[in-house]
Length: 530
Ligand code: G4P
Image (cartoon, rainbow, N blue to C red; front, top):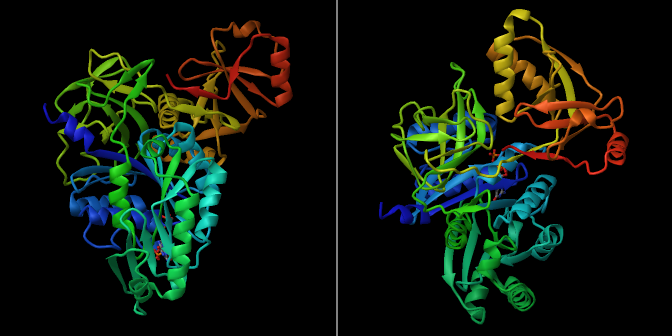
């Protein structure tokens, strides 16, 4: 019991985010290498296997016995226990990424030094800023031609309205890349690339006044530039302020090259010193401390069918407080049932022992027989904890869906509900009509095809889909007698699977109508799953 606090204190849980191709996979691989979780670089993926990331990770886990799926990796380094949450690398912003960020205490953002901020990073960064998640920036690929470091920092500051603090400063780039100057250690990390693709990395303690040594290391021209740059950055840049870093107001920036394993270990060390251990989270107005005796966790992701042979679902939970014990029964708050979380790691690798304990900060994946939804809380049986739900965003495309085979009612209902619980689609129905039609809402139209495919292959149900003309959906706030509202004839009242009331509109004009005819009506574009 006594070392609970220590176990929790040594945990660092972060999400790694980037625009596709900036080097997220390469950096992750190098971090795992330092943790001894994998033995040699290159074993995570080559481009050819990138599309099979899940099986790569499963394979890796089998080989090395680490807690790995495509989305969660745990390793030890220097007395710390580190949980990395991978974020989906889709081109489009997905709710999945948002949910993953809800489970992290900080974020590491990888940026391509030649490209700077790209659309994907922009959206993700905004979410971090919204949640005040500390952001650590790794500017990658300095071994290639890069934009000026001033430009890159200015872009970060302007776009996101936060400060930046370069922890190190690049010396040249591309063919001319000679390494970085570590501002705090006053040390040069020198980089030499040989033609064979091999490189040498050498740390040299060195004052900027030692011109002879510097000239030898990086040459006179780059030495002059470096001295000027550091003078400017020291004089005109932000001061280092750990509080500001932890509040997400100041991003420590590291320059390096993940592929060359250059600057990765110093980054990891500095990150571990600066990043916070798990922090308290709110249940209503009550703050639940991570080192509380009471176990609690929330479901942030549900992944279906990791094992094609079975209809498996894994619910990923972030432990927010206390210690998880495999032998104990816990309360699934939303379901109102006591249950033992079945075999937390069994499905992650066939030859691996199930974990017996886990602590606040950790992510556990448990077998889900179809009872969990995104945002659900699981906790000690007498505790009354309910973490603020993860918001569902308003879908933008709607269709009415019916099963073709009238005999398949059970499979249809089960399938569509489970897919909705995973957060892939949202489902609605018209209250009090007795009609079996289900209205499906999605953010991207591709999700309709995914729904059709999954219902057919996993549940054996063929469906008929009819596009609906609605463009906007809004949740109704508060207790409102919806049937007495004055609405346009093409506005439709529906409920989600939790019984919340919503309105479907064909245009923003109809929303304006609703507001003007129903004083006091309050509508919301997202909903907290409570
Ligand atoms: P992602 O997960 O963010 O999508 O990026 P990933 O790590 O897959 O890296 C994308 C490409 O960038 C890969 O090249 C990778 O080798 C390269 N890369 C990553 N870090 C660096 C770096 O520091 N310097 C240079 N020069 N390249 C880097 P690829 O050719 O697309 O794939 P591969 O065949 O090398 O795997």
